[in-house]
Image (cartoon, rainbow, N blue to C red; front, top):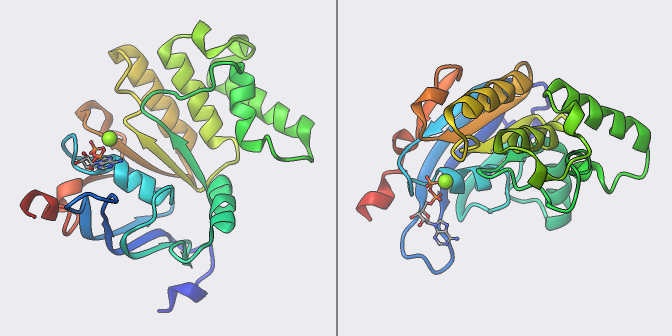
Length: 235
Ligand code: ADP
Ligand code: MG
């Protein structure tokens, strides 16, 4: 089947083939010859030891890093061959990213942080603002919408970061150890919110080494089991 002519809604969201990544100047690959197929709506926990390449793979899936070799198709479309502007446009409409630390801009309120992904949109300002407020409300942050990130807890900041990631209803949400800086209670709460927010058609790939976060995932993928990922340990 020629995937380049396959249009959504295809069940297959992500297809990585023989994917390798090596940081410039690094002697070895972080991963090589990696194959991964992700179906729309899956919630995947990507697990593996620290330094195993989880973050690097998430950056490659968001195309913040370009694969060194191999192919990456998203909804059947080649991401590999996109030019910068097209890639930025693709990322902003299809991918939401939740970082290890909430990574909110410190001088903006929670509401304005959530509005960042649509800051360049000239139309429908009122609708976007309503959506942002609605998301904050659904994540239990309505009262805190006008606070600066420094005036909320780590868990609340991370919930706002989730709202920011899903603001444009992306098909794919990538979360890089989003609970690692939180205590147990806040971690469980953030995790539940993330998985609920992504339930349905949104696909979630979550990097974690926290086994408590695995239970709600539809699939656990060991970094070392993706073909070739172990190559870095031997090369
Ligand atoms: P994980 O998220 O599983 O802890 P990473 O993807 O962060 O793993 O790191 C994988 C490997 O890539 C590690 O050996 C790390 O030192 C290396 N690495 C990460 N970022 C860079 C970088 N910017 N330049 C060079 N090497 C890096
Ligand atoms: Mg990491």
